[in-house]
Length: 354
Ligand SMILES: Cc1ncc(COP(=O)(O)O)c(C=O)c1O
Image (cartoon, rainbow, N blue to C red):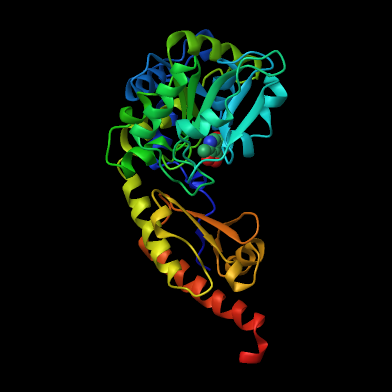
């Protein structure tokens, strides 16, 4: 049976060139700073992002965590969008390990304005934990891969600087944001103090993310990474495909975006499925199947019977993510399965019209 795995862009496998780069990578002990391939990747990442330095981490979660810990003190409050990955899907790491308190701000499609943040920002007071950091997410996963534009980022950055706060960007998919807006990624990183991005999502590398910022920040982050058990030895085997990911895999993200738009357009034509195609800005398609009288889990189980894999979220929400393993024909197949299953389940819900 044909399998179309739309659960996440993390399922992408390394290219042949990446596998060959792993085999031939020049290696050393990175905890001593002696892995030349890691050093090359970190320099490349810093340069790409227009910052001083970068640090290879085991995962996006670890890169976010060391970034947040490096810019806060025990007991600080951190401002996050209500659906932030950092808050929602990272096992409460920064609260557990950093004793930090999340202050959630509901944005629009994942984007917060200075006014939204101002309403949540509390004045210095002995009763209130001090705020030190604002975290933004670009593209925003739970909002459906929506993009913060450079000017929206600058607005929040200017506000933060006016209040003595730092800004960290969870840029797990920041290259998707840049490609979607046809801009250089530096346009998105100029107005943040620090960011992280993932090599192992749409860029197809098997492992790894990078925290990026100024040298002092990276020195602190490196210490936290060690504390978390993320000091790796011959990590050049991770860095080598990472270099290819950054140098060769960015431009093709536009194909994933085109496929996501095609998928969204097709899904809107199916009665009972609701989604707003204008929200599909990158490679994530979020839609609602509640109109078909099924839960997200039921829908996902049904389409899985035909080899189409997706992610169920709360209520009737379903997520599909396009990536390098998905071709136009896979989208066509997915739409034909969705149409068939929609007919099946809506008939079940209305036996009197059979
Ligand atoms: C927006 C965002 N941030 C962070 C992460 C965490 O990355 P990892 O799975 O590598 O820990 C993800 C993973 O899906 C993500 O989507």
